Image 1 (cartoon, rainbow, N blue to C red):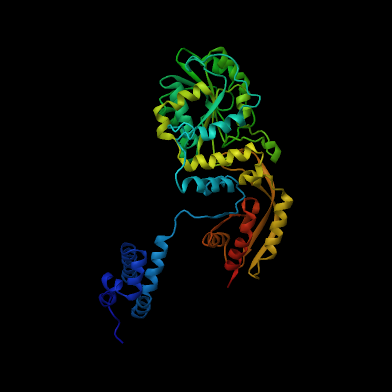
Image 2 (image 1 turned 135 degrees about the vertical axis):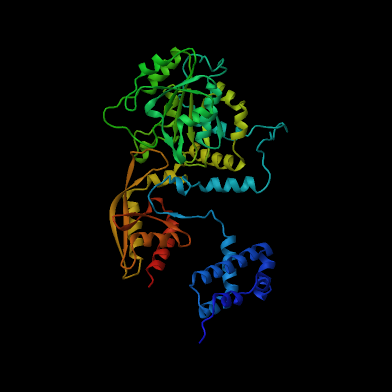
Amino acid sequence: MKTESRADLYRKLPSVDELLHEANLYSLAAREGAATVTDAARSVLADLREEIAAGSLDAGKLNIAISGLNLAVERRVRQALKYSLRTVINATGVILHTNLGRAPLAGAALEHIRNTSAGYSNLEFDLETGDRGKRDVHVDRLFRKLLSEDFDVGAGVPACAGPRSSPAISTIVVNNNAAAVLLALNTLADGGEVIVSRGELVEIGGSFRIPDVMAKSQAVLREVGTTNRTRVSDYEQAVNEKTCLLLRVHRSNFQITGFTEQPRLEELADLARRHNLPLMEDLGSGALLDLRSVGIGDEPSVLDSLRAGVDVVSYSGDKLLGGPQAGMISGRSDLIARMRSNSLFRALRVDKLTYAALEATLLAYGKGEHDAIPALRMMRWSKAEIGGRAESLAKRVRSASMKAELLDGESVIGGGAAPSAVLPTRLIALSHSALSADEFVAQLRASDPPVVARVEEGRVLLDLRTVFPEQDDMIVEALNRVAMP
């Protein structure tokens, strides 16, 4: 029998136009759009040409492929029309997993987003007067309530800050904490010097470095101290007529241990008052709750910083606060008013979806409903609770090729928050007789919905601390699919 040449094989392929006139694809184009189906047809035919060119298709295999062209195009169309941003099951035990979207939103936040975004809202409209309103008011009132308890801003008028109009505190919201730092520094120290410890010049996610953010703000960086030791006297010796701000940056991504020294916030606040300078803290994570209640110590809250005498605090919304991505700046109302009038604020402000999610999250704090916030609820789960779920789940995995055992382990907060804090947990350690750990975890990621786990010492580990209980059944289904021969 004569072997067909590559040219003969190419001639067997239909044209895109011929393929689109097939009855099934003609109706598919009517439903999903001619452009989408045409692109899919071109892509499928291009793949076949590449396989012919590579010599991986003979006449018999090509005939089989051609007979299934309609189905192949339909699959390609479904793939093209799927959402790229998808729900995943986080079984890593990292509560604020940056790559997985950090803090999940509370049910009330999702409902408030739906209600206020499906139609029109009073985002910038005063319903009492009928005049244009300010979008800040929807959350500023709640921040005032949550951050005002026992708060005393102290005395003194910062030289770069202008006259103080009120001892009250206020809060504005921008799109993330890096934007909050940028806005605050540009407002308070544009062209002036900002004194910061060399040991606090950190790099945050995505290779963004504090010195780079400061440079964009037009503030001049003045480093003091050393990497491991900085004293309040170092700050004092650096103060000069160009100084506009003292800055403390919380080391949220790492710890320095051993021969170290760092001035207390109260010491910096006293120094700032004596020199009539504002003190700002880039807190990063921004807890509104005393985390000692969930077993996490040494992680300062926003209120702790304000009580210590800090004038302005910047922090994130989607970390320890447990809300949407946002950057908050809380502090003296006169300083916040200046930031609000900065033209950068309009460029960095957030939309109605963020305000809706943030308002609902803050209301949960105001009502003391901390367990309504998923990240806080996950922190509260005990090792025994997680162990009970893990044992039940492991018993439901039916396969002789898969081995599951329970181990003691540790969950982490993640997201650049509380770097030294760990929470005791129970892990499900899985191994497969026919798959390596990397192959196993890849198949879990390929499930629907994807299950994201971690690999340690040749085994796949599942930590149910970061898995919603209603997702346990989905994990069992994914595991049993992987276990099928």
